Image (cartoon, rainbow, N blue to C red):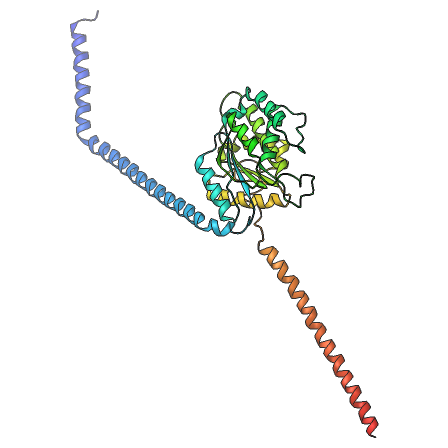
Amino acid sequence: MIDFRYHLVSIIAIFFALATGIVLGAGPLSETIDDTLADQTSQLREENRRLHDELDTANEEHAYQEAFVNEVTPRLVAEQLEGENVAVIALPGAEDQIVTDVQEALQNSGATAELLIRIEPSWTDPDSEPVLDQLATDLVSSGTELGEGNGFDRGATVLASALLSRPADAEDGLDDAPQTVDTTVVSEYEDADLIELEQDTSTAPTLAVAIAGPVSGDDAEERYVRLTSLTQALDEYGDGVVLAGPSSTAEGGLLTALRNGDVGEDVSTVDVGDLPSGRVAVVFALTEQQHDSVGHYGIVGDIDGALPPVPGGESDESGGSDGESDDSSEDSGDEPDSGDAGNDADDAEDGADAGDEQ
């Protein structure tokens, strides 16, 4: 049987073990544990300081790069769109700062960018289809074909034809498009709360930049289709369209939907429209559109590069220079021949004169 002596021995053993631990912890093991903890703390503190320094350096480098690009952007885009008129179309969710920055880049390129239209989120609502269809039927102008699409397609066609025009030398049958903005159509669409005219101009632009934003909801895919239809209509009635937005719009957003569809074969995209370098790409992409070329630029997905080929680059200039040098060398080669011929003629005359004297 377990008696009181057994319990007493157990209690003594427990206290003895506890005392031993206290003695060892306060004695020989104390310094080892303290040193280990101190070393680990020092290492963590040093690592934390190093990471903070690296972060500060990275932030400074990023700030410098952004400031540098902001400074050189006007020079990079200067005169690229000289004399052109560009409409800026802010699609639902587009950030105001991106819209403002894109307008500034277009103006730095020599373009007029006074027409600013904001597409209201209600444009993509299912209930808006009959409204758009009725507006299209009532406001369609002569020479504009509505086609057999749905109300969103037809409404987009009428709005695009009211806002944009083709250059006078267009060869696609749309060169007789009106050269002024159809204010009646714009007013009717505004009254229906489908668009908002933020900046006005009387002259109809020939180019357009559409700014994309995030679209949420379970029916986001359907809304992307409706906005893609609008972008396609802008391309049909203008001389070129670029769809730009932040990288998030190319990660399952509107840019993704457009790039993966048929419209991506006609409309260029830039998925870094919120960056200074992206705004340079927007200007170059518009220039590319004017020459019937299409590209998708940025950092997300299957793209054609960071930005389009630089218009009027060194290769073009050097090619022109080579052509001139070839012509000049040929001319310089011809001149000695003509000079030699003249000398031969003079010699012949001298010989004839000498013969007469004899």
